[in-house]
Each structure stands twice: as structure tokens, then as C-alpha cells.
Image (cartoon, rainbow, N blue to C red; front, side, top):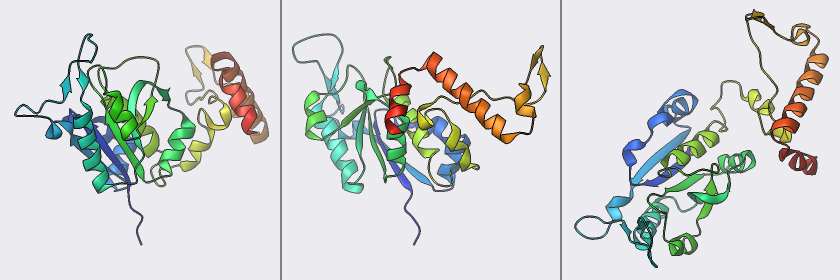
Length: 235
């Protein structure tokens, strides 16, 4: 029996943004091959009144608009009626940081239901009532959650079985084993007066592995010391 594709449902006010970049390269090829599927659901279809309103002024006053709880809930409920087992994630700058560990867990599951917010955000009540998990891709603010959703999808899809031509390359990427990836080199051997390190041309696989490990350790200490405790606790 064939395995069901990894499924993504994206709730958005701009469904025309999808698949966008997700139709290219590794992720696009995986989409064409049926390794994953994408449903871009227009939340305006669940809007209120003749003008399909999806937002209103914030309670208590303030600038901007807020997405209505009833509209967002209706969109979520419609998506869950089709695929009830997908984790529901709201892309939000106040969410917990997206991590490679979380990406690996999601990619091993059935897929994701992603909510791409707009305006000043989403009514807090629907976040609680529908059990949305808030996730952030970084400490900055975007004009909407669509790009954050694309980042999340890309990170997950490339981990699916069969997505990468050389799956063993996943084993030495940044964040595996709590380390950043070591420096990479290729031809030409000399470029603008800079040489490929001799050890990489030695053919001595044990020395090469030790050099790469040392480089990864040094880069992690210098650039992401926050990763070190996580690595030690998992060893």
C-alpha cells in the first residue's frame, strides 16, 4: 500500500502566493513526484458579510486591525474536516523559535496545518480555542505569515524520504549533533591567493574527519555558543 503524501494546508488571505518558491528546486521536485501535497485555503471565503470581512478594530483601541476569531475558526474547522490529524501552527513573531529538532519531528508526521496571519495578528481567543501552536522563524516582523510558512515547509519537505538525492548529506548539516557545519571547499585548488586546506587533499579520511569536527566545534563556539548546552545534554 502506497504511503500517503506529507500534507500541508495553509490558511492565507493570499493563496496566489503558493506554491511560489516551493515549486522549484528540491521541494518543487518533491511536490511534482507526489512526496507532499499543498492546499492553499483562502480565508476570505469564510469572511463576514457581502464584502467577506476578515478583520476588525482591536478591542481596547490601537492602530491596525486584528483577524476575527470567528473567521479564522471557520477556516481551521473546514481544513480539519478534511485532514483532522495535522498539527496546527500559527506563524507568529511571539512564538517559540523554530528549530531543526522540531522540523524533524514534523517531517516524520502526517503534515502541517499552517495559519498565516496578517495585520496586527489574530484574536487571542481562537489561538486558545483551536489549540494553535505559535512558532517564530526569527526575531523580526514580516508583513504576513506566508513567507514564514514557506520557510517552515521547505525545512520539513527536504527531510522527507526520497526528497534528497543524497540523503546522507543530512547527517553533517548545521544543527545536527548541536554543531554548525564545517567549512566547505571545491575546485579550483587556489582562488584569489586562497588555498584549499591541505588536509582536505590528503586522502586521509580520519584526519579529514577530525579536522571537520574541530572546525565545526570552533565555529559553534564563536557564532552560536547557545547551541553547546543542547549538544552536551543530548550526548
